Amino acid sequence: MRIAVIGLGYVGLPLCLQFARNKVHVLGLDIDPVKVDSINSGCSYIQHIDGSAIKELVGAGMLEASTDFSRVGEVEAILICVPTPLSKNREPDISYIIKTAETIAPHLQPGTTVVLESTTYPGTTDEDLRQVLEKGSGLVAGKDFHLAFSPEREDPGNPNSKVA
Image (cartoon, rainbow, N blue to C red; front, side):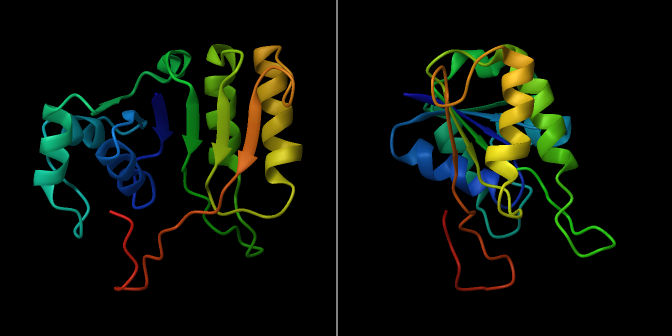
């Protein structure tokens, strides 16, 4: 199996490592070329993640990173882990989710599973994300591709929380 994780921050990178350790080929995607280059060089930019884990998985061919979002067409599942900062009204800003959906929709393949992991309010997946993916891909969620929400498992304020 081959998956893409979009957003290589404190949620996405540990998720990449966990899947790659379990023999799933992972394509990490991010708009930040510094993060992409760091991963492909086997280096960590997150304090609690040891670069040796990244280096080992990149060397084994289980993990690679790219800024080319069209590559989602190569995978069977896409996990979206982009930021959702709070707006001035203390609500999640879903603009990163929407922009990601607009970017990947033209490359979405039938049978692909798309999972939103970003923290957001109820309805974002089925209403906002679904609409953008269907419009941009010409595919229908639940028929041509699968769409789900899974809350992130990172707790950055908790030193005992660890995924990777």
